[in-house]
Image (cartoon, rainbow, N blue to C red; front, side, top):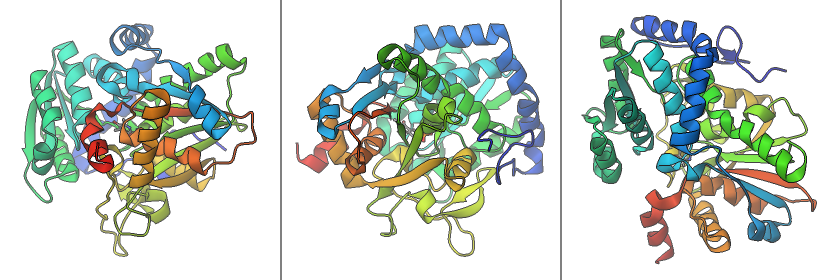
Length: 393
Ligand SMILES: *Cc1c(COP(=O)(O)O)cnc(C)c1O
């Protein structure tokens, strides 16, 4: 079985490019060029150099000794939280800005919910001196003032989306409208392994550095590249695909993807897409989507903004239905407890997204000497107010 994209842009039954006709030229240009450009030695050289000197890669693979003792396994943390801007998202935006430059684009647009992807995009636009426009729901702009300030500080224009619920989906609509109106000079940076083909594959390839490094680092540390388990949280699924990528064809490695159960899978306040969703089209690709009987997308909920998404990328839908990876979910409370635990055991405050992956350790049974790698997708600075409120600190 292949777990990678085929020539038509599909992973099994999932993927494709379900877009309005007016977007065909933009998406086709990208599809016809992304692999060619990414294979150019000059592209690779610049990408690798920026990952090293700007992002700070390779990110460490840290043996979490006290956490390991607690669970009776050898637990390693892939420290994406130590990247510039504090999460894995920068790997993708660095890759896409280099691609956009080579396509001759003069202007970048992006949509953002909590602002993390907006910040990662504004960062690389400042780095390259390229105009940056970020669409963000008016409600989100209110809620996420520090990230709005970061984007503005780096020179981005933040445009409020004032239609509908004034959140992420409305910002996405505005960004798409902009792209349709500016097909020649503008590149749209999508922030996860979602959207029409080739975005899911392109973003996966930029995030694949996570598992590429992990295999080298494990070889140095334990004398073999494969652990027993690899775990990551899933919103759209980009840190998880990056963490899984070079293990997909290593069938001895078990892959675990952790979704946000919110207040509980069956409470009506959840973002556990594989548990609750059905096949459907969302944001340009066929995948698994949380929807009503008549196909209306259900508003998701999670305490963690990065996991609060009603779908998953098409490659995840394929990994789920083929059972190559196991999809589980963790509630708000379980994730917050895991975040406090890591802070106290290891002196590392994780993003609440990453805490979801950590929380699943509690539900696993280890045979003793097993090796586990958890993707620590981001740092918890942005979440301190939420942690403090929950724990009354
Ligand atoms: C955005 C974000 C996520 C979720 O996005 P994926 O595409 O699923 O990786 C997870 N962790 C952090 C720290 C994030 O900022």
